[in-house]
Image (cartoon, rainbow, N blue to C red):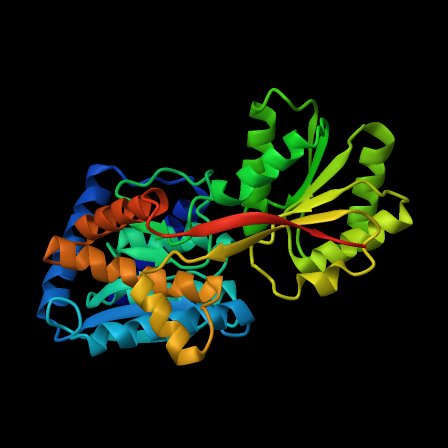
Amino acid sequence: MIKNAIIVTLAALSIFLLLASIGTFQFGSPSENAAFSRFERERIRAVNSASVWHVGFVNNESVADAREIAEGVRFSIDKINAAGGILGKKVELSAFDTGGNFVANKLHVTRLSEDRQTSFLLAPYYTFEVPTTRAISSYFAVPTVAPSVIKPDSLPKLTPDLFLTALPSIDLWTRPVVAALRNRGFKNILVIGPEIEHMGGVFAARIEDELREDKHFGEVFRCSYEPPASYQVLYQSLKFYRDNRTFDVIVFTSTAEDLQVLGKVMKAANISIPVYGLNILERADLGDFAKDFPAELVYTHTSGYLIDREDYDDWVLKFRGPPGQWAQYGILSCELFRDALQANGRYVPTKLIEKIEKMRFERNHSGKYQLHVELTRFQQ
């Protein structure tokens, strides 16, 4: 009987998490609010009684920029601990590698969220893992910041929502592209990018909306695909749009590898119109992928810093060079945790995430942190 009850309970929790992750279920009923309040009270007691701040970190160490994020996280935590910790307690990091596996991410996030001593969570690595990670961590009252993803606009409302991202607003990247297209007089735009659950898809959806809202532009078309890009899928899609629509520029929001496939497709289809892209991952080797591209290619380039200047300078001294953007996102995530916790003076999950959200907004708009996005033209 007890065994059957446990199975039923686990099955109900699995169904809840699935529905929450796809947006069918939303927090807010009296029973869910009561469960959250209980989890928050238990977490406050457990975290405050612990001798250290237990921070969970779920990442994909098989990817270069993820390893850079991890380097930034560890650098920041080492600095925090060297300075005496936060409110008199050191930070202890529990890091888990998913290997890029969705199920592994869910298991690690669940395990860390169920542990009442987890004070803060850094996860996930991929944008398509956001709905599940957000549903689990919010349900168990764990403040969560994702260093490397964009929070999709299409996510269902959660109350409370304890999930944030460290990245600045995506307008930082989309607005320079829209302005450049307007200045050059382009009217009809074809936006090509992954499906919405991927980071490139979030950018594609946002830039599509901005283009449609701008009265300067005429027709705006959207071509979506499931990554990685298939030559045949892109060829058929591009051929369809070329034969049935009139567009004079392409906006591309996917990876450098997919850009290479696009170039082959454009060459085969004899399409040579300009392509504007978002170098979201800030690939240093983008120029290699741009070689032999059959058209004018213009991409965003991000520079500057969005972390504390002291941390930036200390990184330069230690590594003999400036931190990359992804290392900065890892550092920033830890800085936000430290600063918000110190400002609040005590640990309360909902209050902590509210303070982090406020500080993140102030960083983006105060002018203190200098992050710039410019457009770079690759000569063919």
